[in-house]
Length: 405
Image 1 (cartoon, one colour):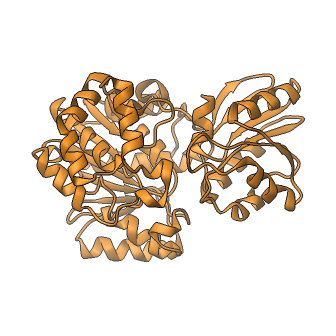
Image 2 (cartoon, rainbow, N blue to C red):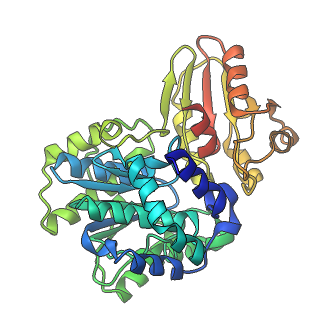
């Protein structure tokens, strides 16, 4: 198969949570452990950092990778989901995995995948670990896909575990309270491995401390340290929390013997986009009218993004907005500006919520807007309506942003 045929096979033949939802969610690590054994346990042959959290884990992972690259290490980076091309998920020093590796990996292991009924995410994790092993990375930053305890990435024993924050997202899988979700994400804490918690919250602090104590793991809360925040090329004000988490993690790595100078930290944070290819975090697409997209999509993420929006200076506000169909729309409506004109759209994935259904939720609460057949149609309408000094925001779902970038 060609690369495109291979990726299409992966998308259509096997369940993938980001596109399908609950039907793709696996309840344990049985399949991943079988795959690791089939691949001769590549995850045991390189160092790792494991990053979980409701929001910020992607940005934190990219920042850590960028800092380590500036420090001279060969750095693997595994993240999800991708925006434009599947290969964005697997990078080494910012360079995406080759098309040839993807096609060869699937061809070599396709019989095993189909026999074992592996999910899209399970085989992708195996692909990343196999690639990092064969390319002999010094260390790999591994972002959790969903939750932590039974996420497919959770077969590694990292140098340090990182949990950015906890919010009420994916409650159908992880639990309906912050304590329950913290327990699931705390599942990445390993015996004797230090853990960095990005944000301290009354509901979750005791959960993390109990897990860490039971595992004899040193626990550190990044937001409890007073620090000067270096400049980053990631512009959202919410990134300050993630930077604190990165700085605390760097301190742990130094204690473990990694050579990371202050200059490497500064340069790493300043060139995250260049070093790792990160996109979609308060990304400015054009000026006059100013157009910004952001992948923040749950309650906590959107709250931070809307705080950033309040700092912008504009005359009129236009919101190109779409969500997936398991989104609790009523819970996010109070966060969004009512003075804006909305352009409702359905992201082009099976989970995408119909734009007319989305519009109904908004109009019933006094919002103003129209529905469109596609994300691009909605964006074109916003560009047509917006004046030079207006502001256009594009978001609500990673998939909406992916269709614009």
